[in-house]
Length: 367
Image (cartoon, rainbow, N blue to C red; front, side, top):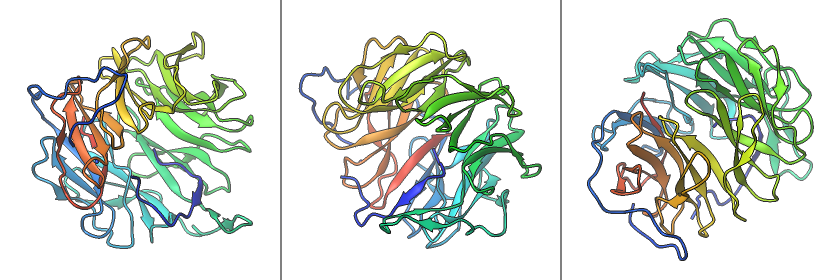
């Protein structure tokens, strides 16, 4: 997800994308077997033409097509499909340093790209950290469509602090929903569109909050001195999964949408994050480095049956379920650069579908 944050300038950017590996002590998922029929389209980000642009392909990897034309040094990440699959929203940064970032929407074929958040004085408030290693900046990020495709929620620093806004899908009527002294980030619509969950540090640590879609009724659901973040609604809207540091390391928890019924699902001295519910709500996939590198795991919604699906010595994460729940797309480093791979939901038939020497990542499956 795109957020407003302190950008740390690093000299070494790549992480050290689809074949098989092994993990001692864990029974791996199947890596051979017939592939589930692959349908639909996948949007992703690629640097193959020199700048980071949004591409789309058929889910089997065919028909790879560049949709955005920002050109180096622009950067167009975070593709987000509208619920009906007819449009794609994305963030466009200028010069790869997250300055002058705007939210755009385009038709699914890349036509009619429109800037929804065009705003003057975008550099107001820039500030380097005292040691010169970090730069705070204003940007628009995290476009998230409402379930009925009429509105888009996003994060902005336009008023001097990280807050959550909502606008109509055509870019009109920008409304600020949060107004707190701490950062409010990562908006996520409830499946029925009546509520928005988000992450906030207004009380000190990062906490999971929920509010009505008009910004009223803002409520702290987690209320814990440790950081809680990286939330995901269940498909029926009754529960929220999230990552928490309350045990001293990252674990995945789940709670009812009102904050009751808290339950820890993972319990491992590693980093577990990126919870993603299967479309039928019966499974939760997530990323974990418990094997020594990041792999994609899946478990039942009560935390039982945790299974390493990718089981490879290279990093695999940033997963996306297919709409029918039969396949999972993810990004992988196993071929020496970031690639988009797909596999059956049981981990079998892992396939590199982008297969390009440049980095391809951030897969987003069309509805």
